[in-house]
Length: 374
Image 1 (cartoon, rainbow, N blue to C red):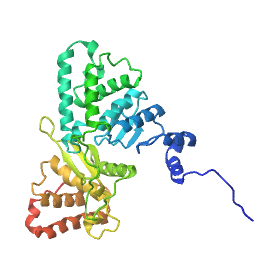
Image 2: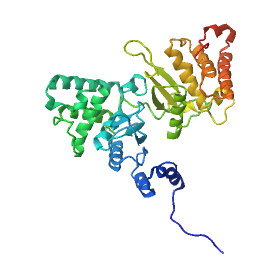
Image 3: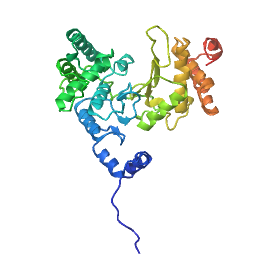
Image 4: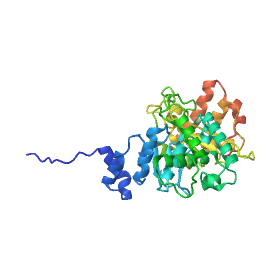
């Protein structure tokens, strides 16, 4: 006899997502499912993000070309924050102005431009021009300030985000908090610039474009070339932090994994003043045969952080690209944190493979390498 029973269909993948996180945070299945139904942009939302903020972000994502991929909670000492790549937003304040402000950062970030993650030079020129006019015009007239926060902050990024939020709240009919002013002259100019460069409805091609998502890292199949999931990006960040990395993160489907440091205003170098671009090639290929193809995520992060970044911090990086890569793999092999013997061997083999391909004898260059100490 048949022992079957009928039950409502449940998407198993969705069910597992709920079990793996939201269910453990006390979020009911109904609440989780309702939150997922609002998502049409492809952005992933932590179920604890308020429905009003999620709906607002969805609306903005349909209007603007955003880099945003994930919204969660837990910003420290701030209403919200966005990582330098624009991919991850964290919110602590549940008011819509916080979502508006942080969403602006997902469109453009001046530091991302500095590192070549974006190419928004013309946009920032226009914003800086607006800000100069604004500061000259309003001077000490507090009644014309965009906001008290904007006026106490020297950052061009914060000026842009506050002005965008200010003008957008008026446009959308959202109640405006007391910290914002009533003069929209310059915030509207900023909103017009954002619409011009980032609006999806703009018929002209944006010259100041986000790095194209139509080009992808081409490793010839030697490393992973598939876009990273949120879980993989988190794993990569954690792996870098285990190696001692303290800077910012960025993600790209069309740039190889690399780390860049920039001197402070006084010329010193610090761990915080850096950007680690995590590309698809941070992960190995499925069927690797050479040492480089087999390098694990931990190997890759040790190569970038211990190998490249820490040598740069001590002014011991190499001007010769070959020697720089060889030095990075050997440094990672010797000083990488928590690596297995197998991973250390892979890094040594990677260094030697590079030399062999270039026809260079290790004995001839070993004294040029800074590999004696971390």
